[in-house]
Amino acid sequence: MSGETWARNRWLHVFFAGTMLLTAVITALGWSPWSTRWPAYLAVVVLVVAYIAFGHRGYDSPRAAVAFLPVVIVAALVLPAVVPSTAFVQCIVFPLVWVQSERVRTAVLLSIAVGVASGIGLQVSEGPDALVSTLLIEGISVIGACAMGVWISSVAGLSEERRQLVDELRATQQSLADANRTAGIASERERLAREIHDTVAQNLAGIVMLTERARGDLANDRSDALEERLTVLEESARAALEESRTLVAAGAAGMTRDSLAGALHRLAERHTRETGAAVTVDASECALDRDAQVVLLRVAQEALSNVRAHAGSASVQVRLFREEEQTVLRVTDDGAGFDPEQPTAGHGLRGLRERLALAGGTCTITSALGRGTVVEATLPTGAEPGLPSAVRHPVAEVTR
Image (cartoon, rainbow, N blue to C red):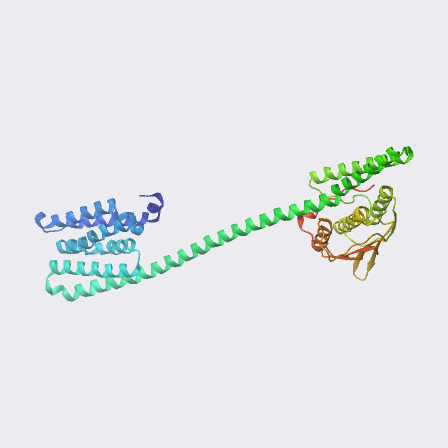
């Protein structure tokens, strides 16, 4: 017998043992001779042995129930037939029938069988004069046992349904937690991809470009220009190193001491030193929190990176201004332009749009071949951007 089955039916075991003990005592106190009482003792012993062997298992073991239930019905007949006062054994026989039966219909039929067997036993011991009282007693016993059994079975069925619902709810919660965890991992990967692209990758691209120009200066023996290239190259490498350390420390890059306007001026100065293209900055102070400022700074970095890599423009204009209830960052260049409708292979523009969408903003790109490009990003002014917790972070200085 498993521990779970024993714990579930422990009070039934106690009740059964007490009933069997009381039945044996009443049989012993009877006035009839031993020759007429021994069948009652035999019925008690057989019933106890059968219960210990397989009756305690309940409907967990259908084969045990099939072997045990006939013994129960026979005991319900023999005991009242030998000692009429032991007819009270039905108080344990009826629960045993319901515990052994998996279906309500089967339990009801077996309860009727117990009542009939007990009634026959009483008729054997009491005679025909007790027929009316026997029918009354057994009828009330069977009806009461069936009513109680049906009610308890309905309560047990409801409990089982609730248990299944709880299990399903827990499974759903676990599935939802797994899905949220997977979504969080994917979101964090996308965030890191954006941060690496907008910081380290751009600096490395600038380093590559500066190295190529320095090699050209060295080949043409332009030592004065070469020294300037090396200075800017060193600054770019230091910036890339700082940004890498910031990312490793689980903080994304931004500004710590400077405002967005100041960071844009430094970014423009660095772009001019690297490419030679003039960058004009017209930036006014705007009421934005630090996360929103980081978003707009990343937009400016991505726009200037694309200008450096693809546009070949001679001048760039960066404007930061407030318009109604939103802050606008506009980057305009006079370079080669491109067709915005054509899909791009890089991650930059897509990551730029995703970053702005997470912050509750929008991005508009206007361009045409040979007519330059305008990148315009807007964010709500004074409102908390809808950034996930993964991108709310302390920000570190990335421009010099």
